Image 1 (tube, rainbow, N blue to C red):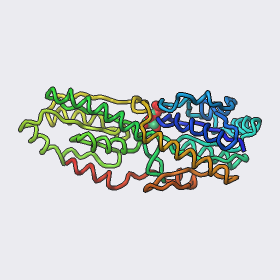
Image 2 (image 1 turned 60 degrees about the horizontal axis):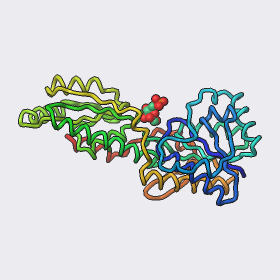
Image 3 (image 1 turned 135 degrees about the vertical axis):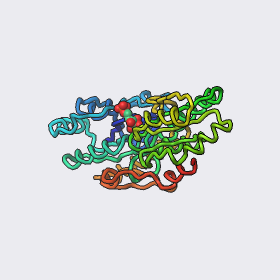
Image 4 (image 1 turned 180 degrees about the horizontal axis):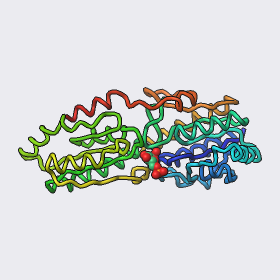
Length: 319
Ligand code: F6P
């Protein structure tokens, strides 16, 4: 079997260590590793090349992905999937490690139902919103980037009489926001999963401000779509001059942490072993309660990720 690796959808820190492990482990197994560049777009356009040790030298500590990625609309078109299969076939590739999210896994499931292509998905997104796994590659690095930003924002917030509202990524999932709020001691956290009810905390915060609290840190998840509302509330109701920082794509960058490098290695080695042992793998390697396992794409893509209750409860500890 010849195996390839592809990154699809949003990049995540940890992809490069995964790519390096993929190449090193393939050589150890005596197999030819292939790279697919530019995600599904590159698969359609035959941006496929045999990988060498040289390609992965010095990449383990770098964020993003040396293979680059894309969000492909063309792959929805059966004619382009046929073209993609012809490209893989021409290289003798029949197994693919897919670093991506549920959308990418769904695309590969359709692809592998049409053509003799086997794949294993490695959950990779800073959002930690893939159903069936407690951990996705990139999350720890992203949380550390956010932590670093919040520590710095707190320095300046503490030097003025101000509220700071920090909007964090996460798509429709509040995971990054809740964890960041917990570890930064934020006073307010707003996530899509919990209705924003300012009246629950308003009286207490106003009282604290009246008795000497001179700054407030509020974390708002992008998916809540409440940034403007929370800003107005802090400024008009709580009565603190307010500044907004939207952290944006810096949350997707940065050198992968120790944890993301280790998780990259574990996910990839297990994924490759599974591919070799199963002619029609078509699974996602997941991590739950300290254990790795393989689950069906349907389980991953068919259900929406539910933020565990203890994170939802954590919001009320801030009250
Ligand atoms: O899924 C990762 C993510 O960074 C989300 O947190 C964010 O909503 C989205 O991707 C941004 O996508 P893009 O990079 O295409 O703007």
